[in-house]
Length: 120
Image (tube, rainbow, N blue to C red):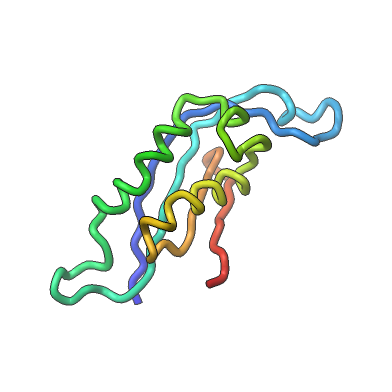
């Protein structure tokens, strides 16, 4: 079993909903998000790889277009864009193109993030 990943970045603003009055994350703010798309599976012996990184890039491209330099609350399906919701949103859009996708990592700061890896 092999495990490969690609890492991407996007810049976006958001505000989190449903928080207590005065919570700092309820205010408009932005992040330099880091996303990792992880794929797992056996190596194709003929090609010598699990998956072509280009295929991961191709699957990611529409998500990047939808998220980069956007107000995430305005993105369909992300009315409360926590890292958890963003990770699941990305999974739902990338997984149909990448059957070997095993996890999505979303970091909103250099030391805080979320891993979404639903059980098969």
